[in-house]
Length: 109
Image (cartoon, rainbow, N blue to C red; front, side, top):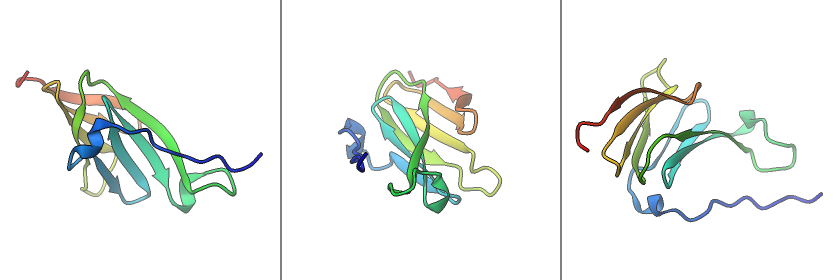
């Protein structure tokens, strides 16, 4: 079995200026349509030997329109938290370990 190419499908989020982020420890997240994909990158990714060092570890699902912003918390001890904003008028704070919404702001809908 040869190496399979890995590609990311085109997404309207790619035209947003703030739809991806990374934190120490090799965790990278990027918005794709109404979701955010979480990827472990680097030597500790646990990838299959002989393949690129990254592995998709989860998806944050909960917005009904395009995700327009995404960022991790950059405070030590809080790297497991991130925030998303969406064209659905909501802002959500997520726990990336449990992949659940911690709190949500929806007053601008």
